[in-house]
Amino acid sequence: MVSELGLFQLSSFCALIGMTLGWRGVMTKFSGFYDLPTAWSQVFWGIVLGGIYAVMGDGLLFEPYYKTVTINENIMYGGLNIFSLMFVALFASVASHLLLRRKRVRQGGSQPSSGWALGLAIGGMTAMVLMFRMFEFEGVFSFVGLMNVGLVALIAPRADALITSRHGYLMLQDRRWGAVLRSTFWRASLLVGLYYVVFNPIGWFFILPFVFLANPSAEKWIWESVPKEGRRRLRRIWAEQARSLTADV
Image (cartoon, one colour):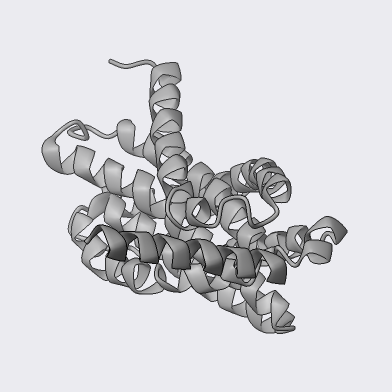
């Protein structure tokens, strides 16, 4: 039997992989043109906030849900307490909003990029706690079980990054209340989906389309974090790269 320390290390390692892969792509594409130090500081705060959020979700939502499912095996979805669900999701969204309202973030207009970094860390901590629970289940080291764990590690950080980055983008548009309410709705939906797929992996067919549809918009949100001078430089770089590719052909 694997010790709890070993399971914790394994779940932490998987969560770090998911966070690293979530950083690649949209954040590396604009690397050097947004406020990177501020984004990295948001990772730290995201780990702190994400740890509290994940523990709250585990105690108030997952444990009661787990008991409901395991007591009656005929129940495919026992449901989550709607008040606890909205409280946990609202807590994370309001806390994220306050972190993205910090003077350092607002001065640089880096809410979307800082939101992506913050969301990656929040989602990573959520995935870590959830995977720790999953590793305690019998049969988790089967093909389906490991695939389910892998999807949690990859999707949870990216999905929360999409939610928080859009939150930051809406803040730039002076839609603060809308940002909090939308983030609360999507974060609650994500929690419901993640807890559901722990016992019913078929639920990924409902989660993945939303992530894939929202992912292309992330570049638009991060683009708003790039200063005007940086945008001009980026356009010149991309134009030069396009010309060099055309010349090579």
